[in-house]
Image 1 (cartoon, rainbow, N blue to C red):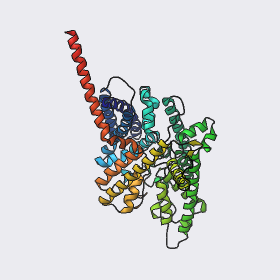
Image 2: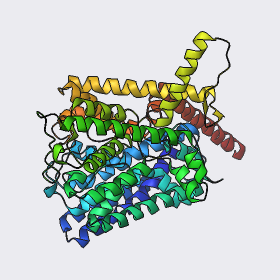
Image 3: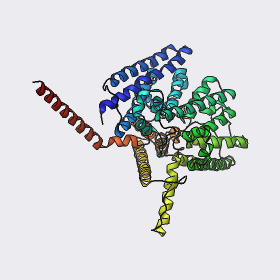
Image 4: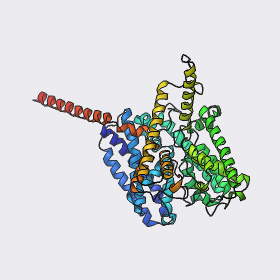
Length: 521
């Protein structure tokens, strides 16, 4: 691994990332919030300076090898989170809280440190939404689309960042693929903004909530999330766009280009439909049963209905679909304080936390396709237990899944659950109760946002101890990059080989200089 080339590529991206920070700066100036604008000015200038210094470490643009692509992806997400934290730090949050909020934004987690929303400027809430929008399709995918200089390393960067076990390009060139996906992403975001404004939301709120819906992020400028607007029509709009955010963007792109059959014939999309509608039905029945219990009340924010028993059936349907989609797509919005629901309803939501959306979507989590392929593999092993000589390959949409892909999926699931288990253990050791530890761990590793217990949808991660926030910060980073990208860089052999190669190159260069000097002599 050529560390100077890795730093050069990170610096190139960081320089253009500094330009993006001009957008919230403009919002601050529009609303006359001059002091907060200084924070974005400092952050942008710092990112530009550091990016320029890193860029100068390597002069010649070269093709990245696979491990260098993984290193660039992991470092870019870490570095932008650090520079993205500067505006939060400027507005009074502590260092770890600022880093936590920034990483939660870029990874589209939606776990917040904020407790009193009135303390922060409109530009900062716009920045929260924008960070999620950038992270939803992928920071690197954006810069691949707009920076021709990155095209030489495009394949390694695009597929190292892309979620899901399948690599799919829509066009012969990676840069054209990135442009196509980002165009679709921006177009859907614009459509949602228009639809939300039509339902009565102010333009500022419509923009911020659209950013975080299409990114499957969940940050909202309203302290009570979407429930705070008390707008059923807006909730239905968000339900539709959350569903799209959890579906494969590549297939949606092909559907728009006239290949609708590819979308509805896709086996993962079919499973996704079944899981969403089946879970919504189960949750609907659980909520109806909950409402009929005279000892239970359905408490929500002051803007929402006071009791489920007083709600119309259509309201219960809306709450069911909204909460199922916000969990399975890992968006993390809330229309109600679901931590007060019955155990049956909470069990459904907790199971969905371990599912995630489709591969190639903005959603986090393990992804539907991995669960489906592992289920098929398990069924195959049951058949082979009775008929050892049967030939029954795992198929997806008629295609045979190679054994190496199944091995990588099994390894991913093992490492994902291992990271989850380690996180739960550490949070419990650091003082959290078991429910909080479990749900906070999966909510950050799966980039969902709210959990149960002390990190419920109407609460904040702020009271957690510093050590727990560090663990959850790492969870968000590891989970957004699908575990393998980060953990592969922890192998000692990667760095041992890197330093040995560096030493060998220096020795070779020294010998060449000696020979040149001898020839001149």
